[in-house]
Length: 240
Image (cartoon, rainbow, N blue to C red):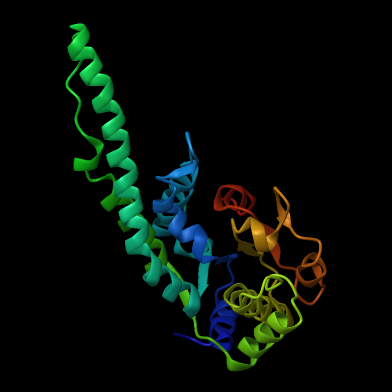
């Protein structure tokens, strides 16, 4: 895992747009197979965005650099199996609902086409593989104790994104701020974007733009870090 300085040096020699990801946006590829709220499934457009990004970088690896912190990678490892199970359960529930319809058809004497249960298919495995590919593609930045200390201070003063006492979001945010700040100091002019679907800590309510409390930090002339609430929104702005 390279420190920030190494990533900055590499980008100085081969400049390209930088995409900093939050854990939720990598897990969402599998987590989208679930209910957003009862009776309302989540949007699955994130799958198309991740697949498009991976395909684009497979053909043109110099089109962008995906960056995650070591903490993001660890959070992904800690959560991917439970999210996989929930996706399996979601498909099983759909199968059960369809099964009820088929039983009704049987009672009514209505002929129905053969139904291939969703839970027996490879969809969840394929989505986990897609999420894994995104993690493996990313450059994993090592954690810096000084930046972790800054994140802890956000917790102590209840400063967003740690306004509710959680430190992990602030650790990631401090590292992405410092990466961008260091790149700008080295004369880097390409786009650097931070993507997070974490509405509670980063969004301005339900609007997929950075919360006003954080906007001065990312808009600072020494930083100039762009924020997007999803990869779906970010990628067209990077020509991907």
